Amino acid sequence: MTTTTPSRRDRLRTATVTEIKQAGRRLLVTGGPAAISLRAIARDMGMTAPAIYRYFDSLDALVRAIVTDLFEELRISVEEVAAAHAGAPPLTRVAHLARGFRRWSLAHPAEFALMFGSPIPGVTPMAADCSPANDAGARFAESFFTVLEEHLAQHPLPEAAESLDPDLRQAFQPYLDTFGDRFPLPVVYLFVASWTRLYGMVAMEVFGHLQWAMTDIEPLFERELHGTLRQLAR
Amino acid sequence: MTTTTPSRRDRLRTATVTEIKQAGRRLLVTGGPAAISLRAIARDMGMTAPAIYRYFDSLDALVRAIVTDLFEELRISVEEVAAAHAGAPPLTRVAHLARGFRRWSLAHPAEFALMFGSPIPGVTPMAADCSPANDAGARFAESFFTVLEEHLAQHPLPEAAESLDPDLRQAFQPYLDTFGDRFPLPVVYLFVASWTRLYGMVAMEVFGHLQWAMTDIEPLFERELHGTLRQLAR
DNA sequence: TGTAAGAGTAAACGGTGTTCACTCGGATGA
DNA sequence: TCATCCGAGTGAACACCGTTTACTCTTACA
Image 1: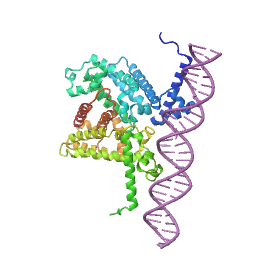
Image 2 (image 1 turned 45 degrees about the horizontal axis):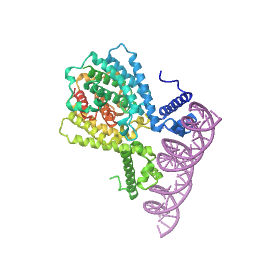
Image 3 (image 1 turned 90 degrees about the horizontal axis):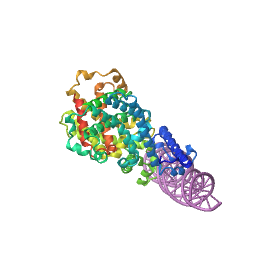
Image 4 (image 1 turned 120 degrees about the horizontal axis):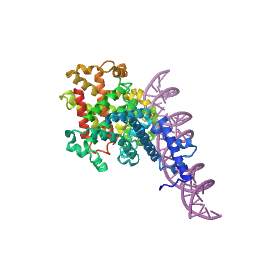
């Protein structure tokens, strides 16, 4: 055991950190991403706003920490769904992962907006690095990847699908740089394409962008999901 | 002519209104949706912030007006692209509409975030009514609908596709309530499904959510676009 | 036991949306 | 022509916000 028992101060500190994040989460749920404010959190905790700077460098850092927690919570929620169908074939487990993602997102619209909405500050700059929250985001994606990997071990892609257009192949350079050749590129391609469809469906539903046409989006979701799975199984 | 020539005061008023919106647009482009502020706009115009309340009820109303203008601008940009291929078959014109949408969105990421990002205030409440901006949004959707209509006039859907699951049929009640039976439900279904995919692709690209895997998203976009068109042509 | 570090506070700076009382000038009607 | 009214704009104020600074007080440790 290299980790000694944490000192009393450390325990108090981590307790305060979680209390701050919980208060922020409460504000997020009741008032949306923009409602998270240091002063409101401090007010909730019976403190003054500058005290929070003992625990987080800025409001932005606090929000990033909350996002990290949310990704971990989403990952656990989704993996529980998959674990509930542990015996099922991988592809149906992928379907349950997708349904779990949709269900969690619909139950937590404010959190979804914070995690997957537009990176508000400069619209793009945040998304480039995002090492803090993206580790958690990568772990979330990992749960999809592993089940997909399992499926492909049982049902390898046909020869034809293994070859990708050269320009498409080259476009995946960032993936190759950071993840190496862990998954063959056609798998990454299928993952990105499927994830994009899943994100589009869920984002449209959570943001209410389909309310002009439909009430219950679930039948549409199921059809699109089956179409995507068919593409994966091909 | 029922409209008399506008008075001098009216002309000054509309000029000020457009100047306010232009200043807001400038702030949007340089600093993202959150950078739009009444005080900054007033500063740009050599005015004080309360003066803007002579022209807009609130910052929210001003932002909604800007969004309306943006939807109109996007619609015109997209229709110009389609008009440039007026002779082409409807389905390839749909493809050009989609490409035009992507191009405009990539060229105007801040505007895209404001128009299609998460409805920030209460995450959902705004999306329910949105009569002001949604008129413009409906006109934008209209340009897709009409070309799709043209295609289906030439290539009617096969009998089998005409029938929709009863639950799916019932889910489209909001559409039937506001638009009646202008388009058969399978067409609306195809539109919603295709639009969802298109939105997912473009949002992911504009928000930079795919940068961990790819640099150039265009090949992926083209493949997805062709897949969707094939579904429409079936 | 002295000391250093951590936790918290009050005050202040500059920023925000919004409201209210007010002035001023141009249009309008008697 | 003159009085009047209304619209545009201002300045001050209120209640928020993030952040920094200087300060106090308690706790842990050498």
